[in-house]
Amino acid sequence: MHLEAVLKSSARHAKPAGLTLQYGTAGFRTKAEHLDHVMYRMGLLAVLRSKNTKSGIGVMVTASHNPEEDNGVKLVDPMGEMLAQEWEVYATNLANAEEHELQTVLTNIIKQESINMQQESFIAIGRDTRPSSENLSRSVIDGVSSLDSKFQDYGLVTTPQLHYVICCRNTNGAYGEPSVEGYYQKLSKAFKELIQQAPGHGSELGCLRVDGANGIGALKLKDMEQYLQPMLSIQFFNDGSKGKLNYMCGADYVKVQQKAPEGLDMKPGERCCSFDGDADRIVYYYNDHDNHFHLLDGDKIATLISTFIKELLSKMNLNVKMAVVQTAYANGSSTRYLEEVMKVPVYCAKTGVKHLHHKAQEFDIGVYFEANGHGTALFSKTAEDQIKRLVHTGATEEIRKSAQMLENVINLINQTVGDAISDMLVIEAILHLKGLTIQKWDEIYPDLPNRQLKVKVADRRVIETTDAERRTIKPPGLQEKIDEIVKIYNLARAFVRPSGTEDVVRIYAEADTQVNADALAHEVCLAAFSLAGGVGDQPQPLP
Ligand code: G16
Image (cartoon, rainbow, N blue to C red; front, side):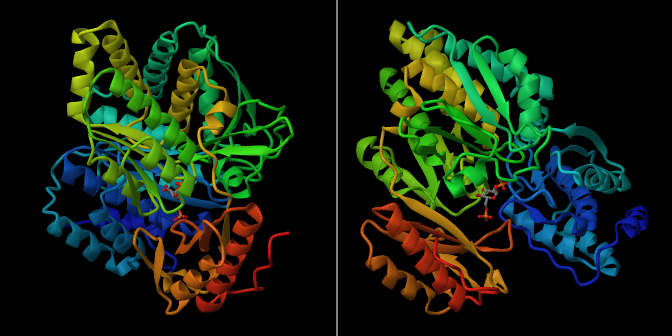
């Protein structure tokens, strides 16, 4: 196999000698200045994957919730899902090959996957608003072009918009029109139809305050706003016109800090939400009349959506298998509510949407959400067909109406990946259809107080986990220490895991009171610091 053009161009995207990177929770992620060679090579890999699957593949340049100085890349597989895990190894090998090894690594992938290099390929490229993203996406295009592949540069798009476009292209338009315009039209049509089905609640939802994390989500939602009026009026905050991406704002900040983003003044009861840096996550929140902040995270969203779907299914007498998939971060109260009150089976997957998505695909209807607000609902082909049939053939008006509502939910929710804009519209529609205020939604079940912390260690790979990341198996003694600490507190749970997107170890703790959750998180943090090789100053208790 002659790859002269590839090697020649590669010299313009030279890998810093000795730099090794790991394919993490959502692709490669690190400081932007270390990523030029990775982008070029992911352009190459995307072409090989496209030839291998005989389908279009997406490459999104983004580091999502990470600070503005970071960047990263997410690869999108044919149906809009994350890159198949078997290919993550190829991605790592390719990213870490020294210049002189590149030809061998490429040839091995081609051989191992029996790739026909004459097969046509197509790559869709998108990027977020980071200052480094434009140049890095050019490096992806260089990689794609050096293998003579067709491509389309979609420019500034949200991550879920790129996933949507890929799915539309590969289903020959069955999922929708493969353009950002097509995305706006599909979602807004389903949203409008859903809202109009609300008996006696009118068709205006009032104002929603959106924190755009100073990122791409704000830009795209502004473009879409005209399609949503007059039903939904949006007030934008952190729209990128002045602040820095993800700095003191955005879904990750709000979830981890458990407070409102900077620059957003809330009056009691006002409905607010935050997107993350590439608009694939969303969390809601409000202040009550005593000015206490209330967060409605991915767990609350999963409960709202799955309860709504379950109610419709029971009105339709439709017996399909539905489940909710969460991660170890799910608040214990949400899991109990879903299992014990809603009687919905709940499964725990490892962190990373790729894991939740796969688990959710095992059911007729799989609702998956990470507590950080990343999630969606998946409907199997059989479930979709049954629902669509009932829209016309349902025995009663109630069955037909419920089926119609569910069909609109199917069209409104982005089934390819978690999507802040699509999830927001689904939530707004459900609140409206059920006549729920954000307070009433919050009151469905009370969250257990919880705390997330992070700690820096010399090499986070010294921590190995098992049981969907709920327990550690390495370093020796850490799990025993955590068990010992957890025993002291009521309704307590805690775990430690290495992040796959940042160079930190994450700590999660929940307990009966906030004071206890904070103390538990701190003690676990100290244990991780001392047993996993913490660097810098010893973590201090929360003020
Ligand atoms: C990515 C993944 C999420 C994951 C998050 C944090 O989110 O897509 O599934 O929860 O990273 O992962 P970790 O704890 O391993 O750092 P995003 O929104 O940053 O792409």
